[in-house]
Image 1 (cartoon, rainbow, N blue to C red):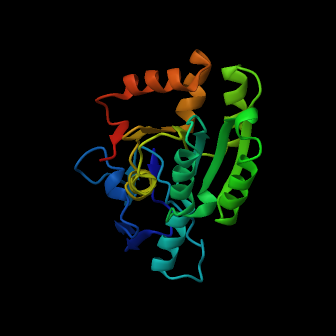
Image 2: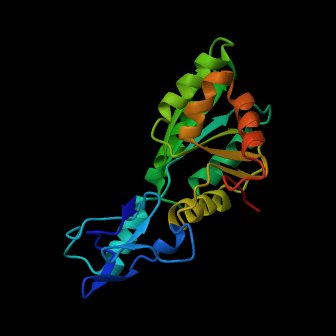
Length: 239
């Protein structure tokens, strides 16, 4: 059982909690009745916003809320597959990434390409992405071993909260995608494991870690995960 005890966002009056100052408790209730223990709100799952009573004691409540929210932006890991014959396709997705209005330190990109196809072109793209503030790397396909190649990619994206593998031909609005992911996971504390927008699928890394070894192929795993979460609260379709 979790509770708001000793949280700086718990408003306590006469020994009883009156409200959650960050207004997140409403997302953690499993019923319509406020449950309390010794006058403190209780809930059934972890509140990501819980902070100690002395956390940033020099800040106002508004400043603390903003600081907590900024800490909780999900890390987005993007594997960008350079699989189009038209270099402009890859560049179009790269431009979306560079122009994202989202904390740049929360985004990491790995470009997945064949060395003999793009060995000279990719380093220049990587530099341009890094100059925008986004961490960017590459994995070059030398041999056709899907598992080893993809493992190299996702080892570089180990800190991601949500992972996606995008074809350079993917139709996606990345700005809308990351905004919805942050709103659902951070602002509303939803237990969404998979987000889907057009051709793009963003999967919670814990879910990837759990299922990838069953398939040893990200695309096959993604199809299986989508099938598993279809028509459940764990899938959010971004429209």
